[in-house]
Every structure is written in structure tokens, then in C-alpha cells.
Length: 483
View: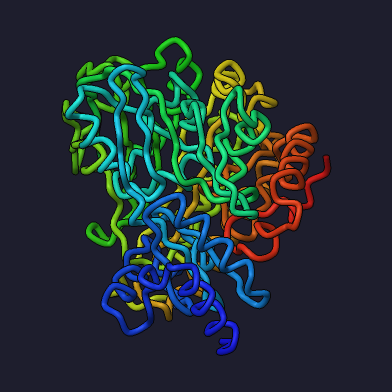
């Protein structure tokens, strides 16, 4: 740690009238905020944390930090990025937006204005009071800011595409300290690139989201014996191929080693956003006997609460996109199961870890929805194939287990890439919010979109603060993307 740089940053923030926002190591709040990152891989310790509550405070603290030439910083909203340094920093300052969690609903415009540090469970519970919902995170513990600027997958994905498509305005603090609005009329170039290219232009301090009426949804998670694997794969392929005709339905199908069962189980999470219970679209899964079944007809807020994933693990995630192909899914499941056996052979029998090979339908029309709703920067509209979004993960409880878990998860990802390229079923696209630090999402958004991201970064951050001083996330300057 550079003591001089740390003291310089504290002095500049204090001179700007922001000293009360600083949280130092040794403070209970400091330890609590570090512990609140979902993945223990993010539990690094910055020089100190700054916790603004308003856009003006973000502007002033950003100006102060930039004036310290040796000070780097990271920005956090909910803290759900899994990899080390994704939204935290060891040698610098973490700007923690967690205290910026205000949610305001405008009855006249039907717009919800939400600060980035709010969690989706807070958003849903507040909007419940007004009888409306938004297309937001499925896990209620996820934060608003990073989720939306990375795209965002909701239960309403087949109806609206990525959640960022529902944003009508971003409020952004730029590196120069200016506070701007980005929408279809004002700064439309910035508006478009903020939908998928997070962390390259400024700090988002408010999003304005479309709302709609959807009183209840039906859904939940079911766990079944791994002997039903073939049925699950066939059902997944059929569901994906037919999704455009039944966009009120959404699902994910996966294979997961679960320590409670000491075995691999098949899992399905499913939802019907019109509140229809046990719809025919899920019949192939629903007729299988379940070891666990949490399906219920509830509000979105209750569903999001019940969908929260356990925290407190060192986590590795990697992601890819493949064609909706039965044989390919079957091969990936076999590779996942082989990885589980390797993990079990390397860890003590009592070790607490779990794995995931998850497939989520991503048919060709999803990308086109983004274009129809004003455009985003994600590049999925270039892909016309019915596809499956693959997420592979290893979650280990102890730091001593992480190196092995991380290596084997990456080995599985490389195996998936190799077999899908051999089979002709790979699709070159990487979802930002699932990507590992070793991946390069912007490489696959298309030349035109890359050019837009680079142009916006140069226009709104000409000094490159968010490329070189603000660490974390994926930087267009570090991508191998051409455009």
C-alpha cells in the first residue's frame, strides 16, 4: 500500500467535505461491507471505502480521487461480481454505492427511478405497494447498477429481452465531475452503450425503468435424480425451440453437485410470468418425481427472495453460448460430472463445495427484442440461431480449495469450447454478467458495436479515467475486439 497516496486521497476527500463518507479499516462497517460481497473471492481489503448517498457526492468524490495521481479505485453497487477485483480493490479505494438505494415510483409516468445500490428485493417490495413490477434480477440480493449495465436476465427475458432494454434513462457522473442524463433524446450514444458495456464511461447514479402490472407469477426450483438426465436434456431442447410461441415462460436447467445430497442432481428453475400454475410448457419436467419442489404462485418480491443463492463461497464462473443441440448438451453434462469426480478426489470427504453446469434458453428472437426496444450494445442480435447460454461454476468454502476449484472449472470451460468448436455448435458470444476475468466479452459484440463503445469512451472520458484509474469490470481498451 502506498501510504502517501492513501493519505493524499483522504486529504482530498476531506477537503471536498466528504470526510464523513470514509469508512476505515478497523471500523465494524468496513468489515461488514467487505463481508457483504456475495463471493468470498471479492473479499480483498481496500485502503478505505467511500459511501456516497447522492449524485453530487459521487461527483465530488470522483473529482477528489482523480486529483490524486497515484490513487486507483473500484466501484461497487450490489457486489455480486464473482471474481477478485471485479468490483473491489486491494491497492486503492472502493466507492461503495450501497447507501444509494432510493426507489421512487412516479404514478403519472409509470416509471421507477432507482439508485444503483438498491437490491432487487428492495425494488420489488417497494413497487409491490403500487401494484407494479419491473424486469429485474431473479436473485433478490443482486444489486441494480451492475446488473443493468451488464445486460440483466429476468424472468421476463422472453417477453422483453435483457432487462437493460427496459431502461428509459441513465443518470451518469462523468470523469470530469459532470452529471448527465442519457436517453433516446439526450446523449443517445451514451444511452446505448450503457446497456451492456458497463464500467467504461462513468458512474451510473440512477436508472429510470419501465414498470408494468403483473400481480403474481408462478415458479420455483425443482431438484430431481440425475438418472433423469436424458429427459431433462430433451425437454430443454424442445422448450427452447418453442419459446417464441410461449414467451410468458422462462427456465434454466442444470446439473449440480450438492453437498446435502453428496451427489449430482438435476435442477430446473422455471416461471410463468402470467401466473399460470404448472403450465403445459413444463410438462416433461413436472411429471418427474422431485426430491425438492419449491414452485408456488407468489409476487415477484417473494419469488426473488426465495431465489437468493447461498453466499460465503470462493467462486469461479465461466460462460459460453452454444447452439440448441441435444448431443452437445449431453457431452457437456458428462464433462461436468467428470469434473465433479476430480474435485471429490482432491478434496477431503467433508469438504463444502458445489458446482453448476446451467443451460438457459436464448433463442434467436431475444437479441432482436433489444433492437426493437431501442438497441443495446450486447451484440446478441447478430446471432439468429436458437441458443443456450451456458454457465459453469465451482463454489468452494475454504480459500485453500480455491486454486483447485478454479483450475478445474476453467479446464471444464476449455473442454466445452473444444468440443463445441469440433461439433460446429459454438456461438461466439459472452455474457458480461457471467464472464470470468479471463474472458473478453467485447470481442464478440460485433465491429459496429465495438466502434460505438470506443467512440463513447473517448467522447465521455477523453482522459481515460475509467480505462486506467477505475479498475474492475471489462475495459474496452484491454479487449482484443476490433472495431
